[in-house]
Amino acid sequence: MNGLIDIQQLSVSEIDELIGVAEDIIANPEKYSQKLKGKKIATLFYEPSTRTRLSFESAMLELGGSVIGFSDSDSSSASKGESVADTVRVISCFADIIAMRHPKEGAPLVADMYATVPVINAGDGGHYHPTQTLADLLTIKREKGRLTDMTVGLCGDLKFGRTVHSLLGAMSRYSGVDFILISPEELKIPESVKTDILDRRGSSYVETASLTEAMPKLDILYMTRIQRERFASEDDYQRLKDSYILTADKLKDAKEDMRILHPLPRVNEISVDVDSDPRACYFKQVLNGKFIRMALILKLLGVK
Amino acid sequence: MTIDAITNGVVIDHIPAGKAMELYRVLGLEDMDCEVAIIKNATSGKMGKKDIIKISSVIDLDFDILGYISSEITVNIIKDGKTVEKRHPELPQTLKNVIFCHNPRCITSIEQELSHVFTLTDPENKVYRCIYCDTRA
Image 1 (spheres, one colour):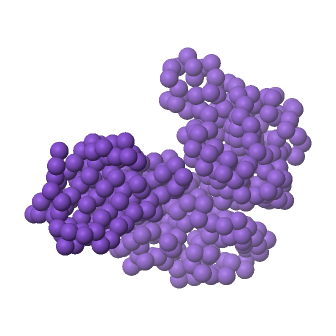
Image 2: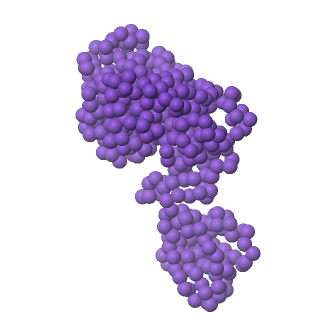
Image 3: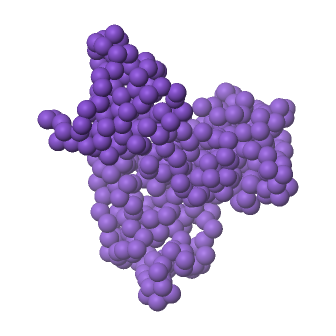
């Protein structure tokens, strides 16, 4: 495998190395501004995801490279029935690296098997989104100065939330990290995530339905969206949704140095009155996403 | 019930009862010209009941498939009426086009030419997952 499909491919030292490069980019942007002059990234987005696509494109442009690609499958050969394998074999002739978003799970893995250039998974359905997790990790590192010895609360849809599963997979490899899993009964973390990730790594975790009770213990609060369609009935949704909406009032018991993350887009799960709180980091997370993608592109292209 | 002993061929013994037809299908035995006997629910001291397949030709078997069906299986190679080799298949690391992914969100659901590949992720519990979407077999 040449690219990055799943965050689990990266060792802790590789993640730390990427974070180190990203921090150096932040401190010395001019040093990196021409690193990839003459190189091209192809952003192959089979479904729209404006933020992720623009993040990859900005990352490449800030490294002095350029961008080709498409932003929905209607404007690609996929609409004529071309396979992912054939598409990436062709694109490999034009670009030095590929970032792919696809609605089907595993499509970027197929791309990586057939492309002759590295492929970065920019999200495959509800499956993996490794650069989101890298952005989360860089944000936590920059805000807390470490990735070890902290209590991380994950709140909302823990059943279907891929960003939550990925972050658990990554953070559980650092020592001294305890998790508080905050969700309604209907959206609890899947058993397979508990057995395959948390139990296997001996991570400490508790499950609770109460965000308010968990709040004072948290160093990081990772919010996710609870979608109406995840509930059996509208009544259940209406009954539960307010418990998992973060408001300025609910933050009164939180630590002063707690940090709030959210993969975005936000709908209503974080009230806008939280945005001005210094603990809110979700827009910084977007910026960090660009920096860590810059570090990843450099690594995959073997440029220091 | 008596089935003649074979002179040259393969006897797949200790197949868990009820699995012989599945094995017959996945090994592609229906495409063979030689005689194939399927014995179901034979009495077994070790297993209680077992299935047996006898093939009257020495053929190459896919031991990965056999191992996936059951690691209890014994393969006896018979030459000139004598057992010249006994083999026990092991749980394979990878299965290609033996089992199929039924996840409608998997890339294999829309790209028919892709091989369906599963890897062993938990040997203790014999858990295989699709390499593309991680769905459990």
